[in-house]
Length: 470
Image (cartoon, rainbow, N blue to C red; front, side, top):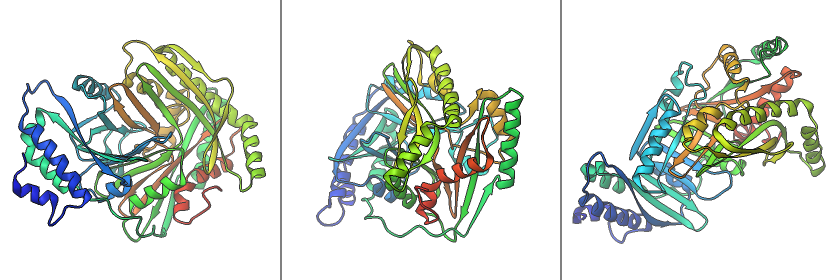
């Protein structure tokens, strides 16, 4: 039960507003549960307490909170936007095997709604640059608080791990008390960049592409994805939430994510590409490759679509991705079906070639098994995978960090991961954008440079640096 003093603080002076009322109801529920906990410490379970919160903007709510990490997730097919803060439980490690630990924990907890959110590095085997250190190699959090915001309103959730949290009653109630009401509408504007640097620069890019083409001629490599890091500097700290809001408007139909492990350092993006989704024993993935912008008119748009669908080079690039995904999933599945041919994935500012893959997992196959087999797909690494990875480590003068790594969530009966592309890293007064292009025989360095530039257009367009659709 809550003390009268704490009730007063949570409700606030005078008549409580809606946010204070929600906090008070949640605190009352948590207090009752934490005051009556019993059970052996080795038999932990997750208890989720929820309160209707009315209409709330997910990013606006997240901006106002002061618990870390701060996380946002929105699926590609719509549904609720999820903002999450704080830590009820944390699982970190060096590779996908750590996902099996938390899934086992979820299965034993008995709460089907609980999810861990997080992701991992593109290449855990590479030395970590300083800018990526706060994220770790693999990190997944069961948040202390989640806000699920949908068309019919929002729900605020508090996750408790019992009996562990029984000894943290005052801490948990204090965290509830500290939850802030959603901030108002979007305020301020993104600043103009003072400078931009690219690694590699244009000369270095041309050299890398030529070296990749030479590897093809020697028969060691079929495809390699080369990336570029573009850093923008500002005269003030960059507001990652303003940027996330811009992406939400600019990139409908994409997976959108925001991960801020410590204050002022955030990885965010709007990815069109699903790595995989598991529902029970069913798994879905997709081969995505080839890029064209959307046209300024319907005639231009149709012409660009036909150009992409008829491009031998893009179909070759896509073919490596499709074969790689099928080869990765087939040993894990009793049934596997891939779409014949290719179709168009049409987004707000660009389009891609796509083929979808569905399968039924063998008994005992875990999320970690699927993740280990699929990542990195040839869409972000290359083919054959190990040879391509060696080339990336040799040629790229930067650490990809979480860019192009798996980002998503794990539940007991389902999980979903996007490929963390079309993304950037905010650190104080800098923004680093990462993007890549698939290099195959016949690739031209200047065309691949232009494709990378087009792919970061949703970000650069937010700063008025170019047309997102160009």
